[in-house]
Amino acid sequence: MTPYRPAFTAALEIFAAVSQNMDAQGIRPPILVGGAAAELYSSGAIATGDFDVVTRQDAFEAALQAHGFIHPSGPGMMTRGWIHPDLQLGFEVVGATLLDGLADLDRVRLFDAANGDQFLTIAPEDLIADRMGQYASGSAPEMLEQARTLFALSKDLDLHYMERRIREETGNDFGVSDLQV
Amino acid sequence: MTLAFRTYKSSRPAISLDAFGRDVARRRAELGITDADMPRNSGTRRTESKKALLKAIKDIGGNW
Image 1 (cartoon, rainbow over the protein chains, first blue to last red):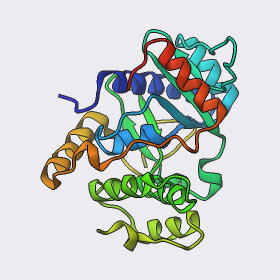
Image 2 (cartoon, each protein chain N blue to C red; image 1 turned 120 degrees about the horizontal axis):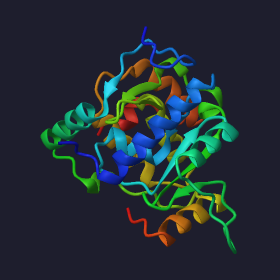
Image 3 (spheres, rainbow over the protein chains, first blue to last red; image 1 turned 180 degrees about the vertical axis):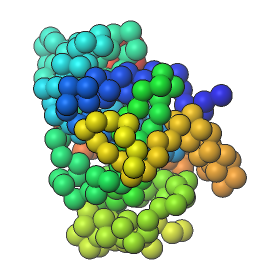
Image 4 (cartoon, helix red, strand yellow; image 1 turned 135 degrees about the vertical axis):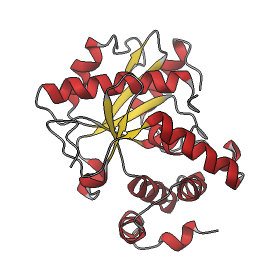
């Protein structure tokens, strides 16, 4: 039995279907990042309401529409995100390039969703480095604990690569040793 | 070389989401890691777009 909540696995099945759809059009599939990636890598220790992705916005949004997503409208609804009324979740494109091009695309992880389609997710090393970067900015102190938990749960990490990436994301203020408690 | 996508070639094999989740859940149990060890985002870095999206999800009944 899957350890993930049903809404999460349903969202990933749609994400995988959208990914296959884009690929069939000759467009590189989107990459899952942010809180949804943290939910995936922590086996649901944290739940996220929306799914951040890095991709080509126009193609992704067209594919979302084909899968029943709508763009919220109304007073105060100035969002770039898309929601699915039945699944009660949303997606938002947060960029076209993974971590400003600093992340090694070959490290992106390929997952099989339950519906047989596949999707891409940021590498755990880069997700942890991104969390450390947010922590180092001073505006998100909770990210240190997230990064440490992800570090503890992840196996077969490339520590050399992750050291470099954490240093890049934190202005050289932190490294892998800051994850070890 | 895994050729799952025509437009993205991965040197790593695909991982079953289900099997991966069970494996991490097992490590969580072994290490005694609970949901409390994974604090939720404080939301201080949310963009206006993100705030509006989360509100829209809540308006249609989303709860996480």
